[in-house]
Image (cartoon, rainbow, N blue to C red; front, side):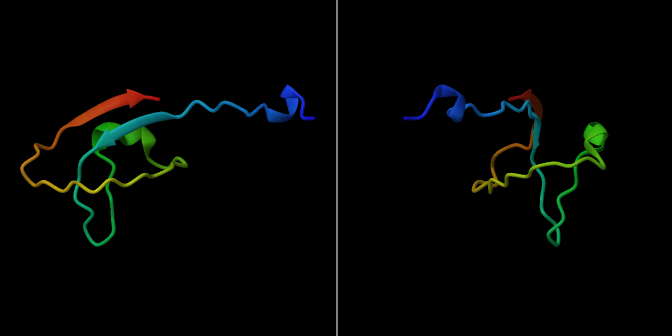
Length: 63
Protein backbone atom coordinates (compact mmCIF):
# COMPACT_ATOMS: atom_id res chain seq x y z
CA UNK A 1 0.00 0.00 0.00
CA UNK A 2 1.41 3.38 -1.03
CA UNK A 3 0.93 6.39 1.18
CA UNK A 4 0.09 9.81 -0.28
CA UNK A 5 3.53 11.05 0.74
CA UNK A 6 5.10 8.51 -1.66
CA UNK A 7 3.31 10.19 -4.58
CA UNK A 8 4.14 13.84 -3.82
CA UNK A 9 6.02 15.61 -6.58
CA UNK A 10 7.74 18.97 -6.39
CA UNK A 11 5.99 21.80 -8.22
CA UNK A 12 8.28 23.96 -10.33
CA UNK A 13 7.43 27.47 -11.50
CA UNK A 14 8.51 27.78 -15.14
CA UNK A 15 8.09 31.26 -16.64
CA UNK A 16 7.72 31.10 -20.41
CA UNK A 17 7.91 33.23 -23.53
CA UNK A 18 6.91 32.38 -27.05
CA UNK A 19 7.95 33.95 -30.31
CA UNK A 20 8.11 33.00 -33.97
CA UNK A 21 11.40 32.88 -35.83
CA UNK A 22 13.30 31.06 -38.54
CA UNK A 23 15.87 28.49 -37.45
CA UNK A 24 18.77 29.53 -39.65
CA UNK A 25 21.48 26.85 -39.84
CA UNK A 26 20.02 25.26 -36.70
CA UNK A 27 20.29 28.46 -34.65
CA UNK A 28 17.28 29.97 -32.91
CA UNK A 29 17.85 33.50 -31.68
CA UNK A 30 16.01 34.79 -28.63
CA UNK A 31 14.65 38.26 -29.45
CA UNK A 32 16.61 41.14 -27.96
CA UNK A 33 13.43 42.27 -26.20
CA UNK A 34 13.75 39.07 -24.12
CA UNK A 35 17.47 39.49 -23.38
CA UNK A 36 16.85 38.78 -19.69
CA UNK A 37 16.65 35.12 -20.83
CA UNK A 38 20.20 35.21 -22.27
CA UNK A 39 22.85 33.09 -20.52
CA UNK A 40 20.29 31.18 -18.44
CA UNK A 41 19.42 27.48 -18.49
CA UNK A 42 16.25 26.98 -20.57
CA UNK A 43 14.05 24.18 -21.86
CA UNK A 44 13.20 24.41 -25.56
CA UNK A 45 10.04 23.05 -27.20
CA UNK A 46 9.85 23.40 -30.98
CA UNK A 47 6.58 23.66 -32.91
CA UNK A 48 6.84 23.89 -36.67
CA UNK A 49 4.60 26.50 -38.28
CA UNK A 50 3.01 24.82 -41.30
CA UNK A 51 1.40 27.90 -42.87
CA UNK A 52 3.52 30.75 -44.19
CA UNK A 53 0.44 33.00 -44.24
CA UNK A 54 0.30 33.27 -40.43
CA UNK A 55 1.59 36.66 -39.23
CA UNK A 56 4.61 36.59 -36.93
CA UNK A 57 3.67 37.86 -33.48
CA UNK A 58 5.27 37.77 -30.07
CA UNK A 59 3.58 37.38 -26.75
CA UNK A 60 4.69 36.56 -23.24
CA UNK A 61 2.93 34.19 -20.92
CA UNK A 62 3.47 32.48 -17.60
CA UNK A 63 2.70 28.81 -17.12
